[in-house]
Length: 121
Image 1 (cartoon, rainbow, N blue to C red):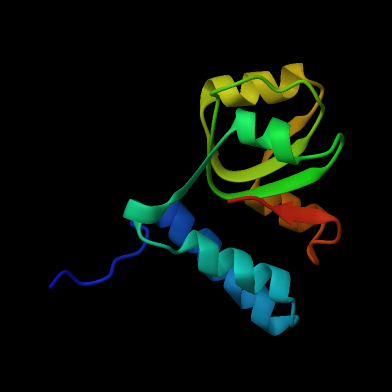
Image 2: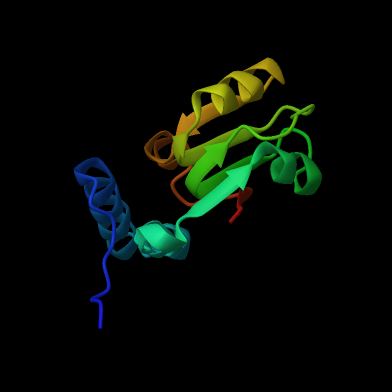
């Protein structure tokens, strides 16, 4: 029987610890939920393509992806996307559409309570 594992990347582990600590300290359920979604096993990590973002998101919406954003598809509307990681071409396509690609840590500094932020998995 294999033992459950979480992320092994030390930067991601530190991010999860910081988010969880801030979430419990300031009683922000949004941050606690993000921390739980980030610490899943590598085998079930969330990967979201730009096609899905184009299909389900509204223009100028702020999105958080607790995983990786991949560049498959086209993005025609500006979106603010925060994620644990991005493919380089996904960042280019998001910026080209007039949006902004940022880290989860940046989004939490700007909007710690997660108001008007949608979690996409």
